[in-house]
Amino acid sequence: MSGAAEPSPEGEAEGRRLVLDIGGTKIAAGVCTPGQPSVRHRATRPTRPRRGGAAVVETALELAREVARKAGGPLAGVAAASAGVIDRATGTVVSATDLMPGWAGTALGPALAEALGVPAFVLNDVHAHALGEMRFGAGAGLRNALVAAVGTGIGGAIVAEGKVLFGPRNLAGHVGHVGHRLGEGFACSCGRDGHIEPVASGTGVVRLYRSRGGSPDVNDGAELRRLADRGDVEAQRAFSDAGAALGEALGSLANCLDPEAIVLSGSLSGVGEYWWAPLRAGYRRQAMDPVRGVPLVRGTLGGDAPLLGALAYAAEFQEEECTR
Ligand SMILES: [Zn+2]
Image (cartoon, rainbow, N blue to C red):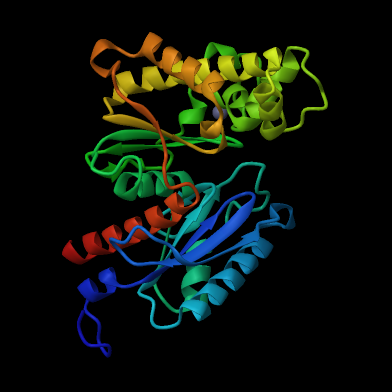
């Protein structure tokens, strides 16, 4: 580190950053130091997304200021992982699903930079999640992986040669929006029909269960999971078919991407063997011989993954800017 009065770009890149993860359910914040796999001064608030984009930003800024105060001392910047497709150049939310009404168009990066007086970096939450797992979690030491986050929806990220593949429209990695026959006749959150997400996500598996005459009293994946854990055959069959379909989709993707590992996270990755075993079998049915043995592993960082990934992105991006 150089002197405090005029920190060098390298010094800033090594410095602590405020990190945020803005999702449909909650907003998490903390402080991270590059190279250290820990989040300090962690705090969370409910997102309550129905209030609209401006109110969600206000809550995020309040939380950010609170954490910055608690942490004390200078911050080199702020790095945020957010739901939605993110224009990383401007830090703006390009589009978001119905889970966060009014989130599209939010100038999140500029709002954070102005509120905290430091440079702000913003990227998609699943891209950040993948970077976190690759640097510090289940993918540590690997350079090529496919990451799938299977929760309310299905997000994903492709890590190739150590870098997240963003794509020119920041769309790359939308694992949930590949076609699968099980999804035929089910409307997807993206407006298309026949994608894997509406039958294999946490909400999708419930939809699948109900479409087969399952109890209408089951409202979410957690309730369905309790039924399945108690041995309910129809609930287990929904998880098993959803897992198998997702496994087949991942096998097809592995044929295209040649990953060293496939990392699964999100609430469904915590479900038992009645999901994992069909998932692995489905994968092997579609995967070509060279990728058939690729391990399907569970993410290890949980809610810290997007925070640590956002930090890694900001630090690496800033270094890249400096060496250009
Ligand atoms: Zn879709």
